[in-house]
Image (tube, rainbow, N blue to C red; front, side):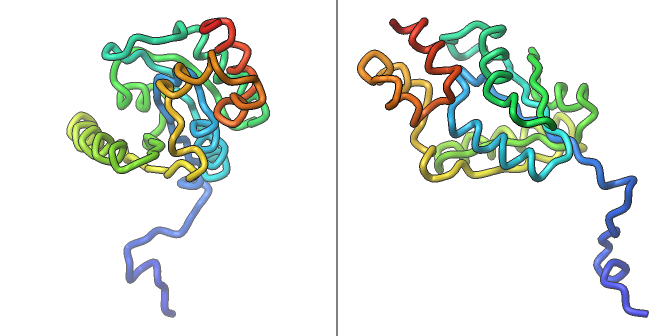
Length: 178
């Protein structure tokens, strides 16, 4: 009998290899609608998604680590398969700690792709068992960045900010940049 799986080397999906956990890491300072778009789409692809809120020593954060974790948690509360945790150190080590083998990365532009490509090669050297999967941010969110938010928050009303960040973040931004 013909079996495409035997010819291609692809294994059929079984209960053993069906469950998939992915880890999406970032500084999330703050979490934006672009991040949320990637998280929501990934939650439909993977059985479990861990959002790892990390410390980037090269960036001066607007929000503390604890504030960022709480903002992400509040923003993803409607997604039952998404958990949020903080981490320090390498993303690949956090992926291992979570019992996952997929590192999810969101990309907005060619500039992001260039930086992510370099990081993917480094991560592969650090742990070849971790695969990096990229999800493109929806075009309507590709321009959103924390720098943009810092510029527009003092000038924009809440309705305008809701085009960039989830509601819990609007309140937090107002508190930080009042």
